Image 1: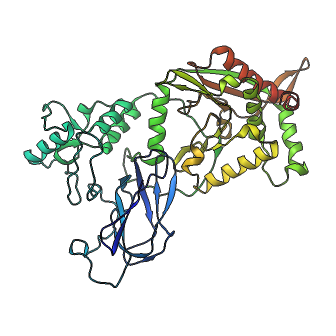
Image 2 (image 1 turned 135 degrees about the vertical axis):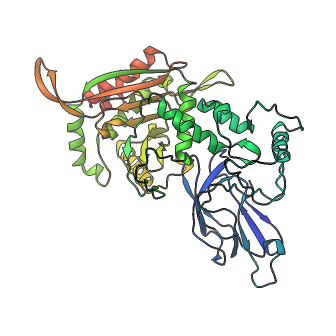
Image 3 (image 1 turned 90 degrees about the vertical axis):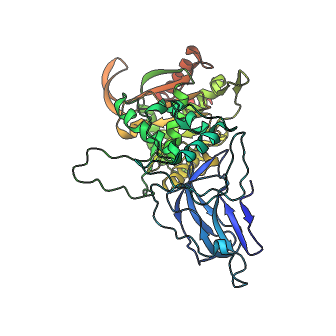
Length: 471
């Protein structure tokens, strides 16, 4: 996608690029420049948050910032112009229409993004009028009838009028409401002409989620504390509730989990295992010179055990292709490690993990955690996962029923490792014990296959020397 346009020989515009794989929007988290600042080719001008990660955007040309089109906190569609740059400063007066740069202020709740100039319709029935910034109608303020009719015409595409009993919303918003289980008739519209926006649907979903039973959480495999991207809003004295906009990574998580839970038939199996020997191996590896400079912990051995189990049972490493009605078997393992960050749960993965030695796997795990802690995980690092590990044990939790990441066939949850009474060699002794839970897609993984994988992982953790004999 082209991310810059020329408005004249002097002014060039930079559009919001698709920084991931098929993403449609991103939120501007922070501007690093202001109108009047000089920029150079490759200089980072802003940080945006997509549905997958926070990403810094470099400008692809030199010049002086003329105008920032959107304030911080605004969600912008891919392809929208976000910044205009004067590439020939001092060569003459600016065009009249752009003579006064728009100041970038704090986000305004009722402001909608400015429509891009010259934007062409991309779907039948979607006309884009060339106009200035649109503003959302305030609640309680009536919008003239012609405006509502225009919105209806835009939605239907060919001028047909929507029945008055049907809520006004564009098709993507209707799909979002359907995915979240929200009846549009119960949503209070705030858009121009009484149209329901994405924000309206998310706002309606908040109280609905509060009333519904809480689903089993999917905590992260690695807890990576970092600076939050934005200071939390202060809670007013006596306030009984706080509403938090669902954006970026958190919105993507919610949509992905809903889609996964109601698409793939989940089955979860559990096993409790004595990992005393694994803990001894971890202690020994920490002193091994070949492991110097890398982080050694139980997660490393668990990851290696899962990779060995997949090698012994390769059919588990697959995906379901609904369109083609085929099972796609993967001959590589991109091992996902769930990580908790202030922006929400992310699951970067280690590419071709099956080919890595134990020191290489340890180094890859260490880098994954370090990058996640810095908030620099890229969309590419989170794409293409095949199986995932989530370590709920870091929170002191014994086990869980994790939800599959979309497109994956299995996810292994690891519980807390605790000293417990255990029958060992005919006697009750204190042993290091943990509980493993394996969730899998029952369309392509039957009970036998899932049980074999979980049993293999447990056997290796109980007797780590099997890493040598089975690998």
